[in-house]
Image: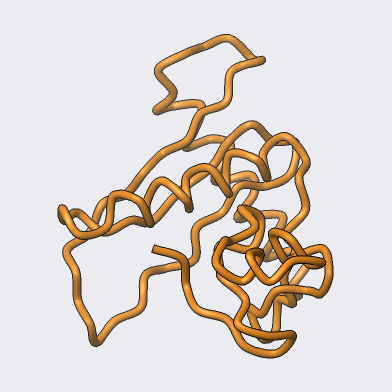
Length: 132
């Protein structure tokens, strides 16, 4: 199946699923669905998504007391995608794009903070760590 067709079908499925499960029926509401999962170090969480301008987001999060800040960062990131905010990271490497993906690119203090549309703290222009 061609990639564009797969993306289109997935988007339609997400919209139908969100319509069926939404708490609010107002078309101007943003619906973020959070799927909590147990921590499993051997398996990476599925990618969360918030299609731009669809007002629907699905966040995959860990159900443990150790991850509330991380989960909240992902929820905020996907919520901002739903209203059109672009990601500020390279999709292939997941590294912040300099300077837009740095919280404060002109300041070394920016290396201790994460730009919300990246979710990572840059160590330098090629390395970063996941924000906690």
